[in-house]
Length: 169
Image 1 (spheres, rainbow, N blue to C red):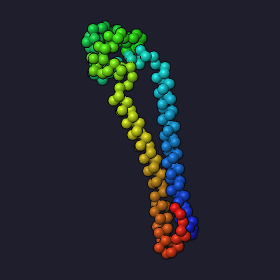
Image 2: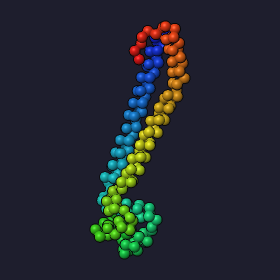
Image 3: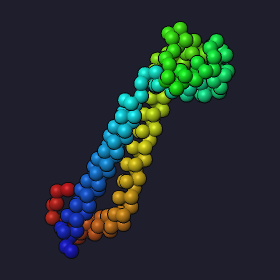
Image 4: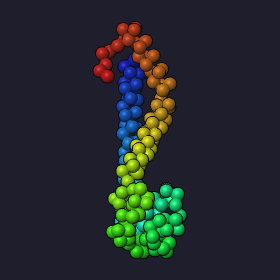
């Protein structure tokens, strides 16, 4: 292989690497879209009382409380708290306020995700994306690194020998 062909080959390797990166990003975006569709479909099936109840249960457990302990603090029966947590029955406005105070969360947090939960989810997703990109890039570059080094050496040798044909790359 002559000098020009070798340098052209080196250039094609760099172009291939950029395409691999683009393909990796496309695959990641596709995967994330599928996960979002799945999560969205699951959440759409959930009623507001079920969402509220699931969040009450999650925050209660996070606070280290049993149903019995929380219901006692709220002045309701354990059975009443249980049917609220399952979404079978919805809590009154005043009970929502008391639950919010006892669990030390905003009423809005009981109807959706808290901003700290969202930040954690965003950071987790960001980390997954970055790790996937880095793993893909590392794998792609590892297979080509020795060949690239050899081609660079050949190109440098050719330039030093006056064989450089003025390639634009």
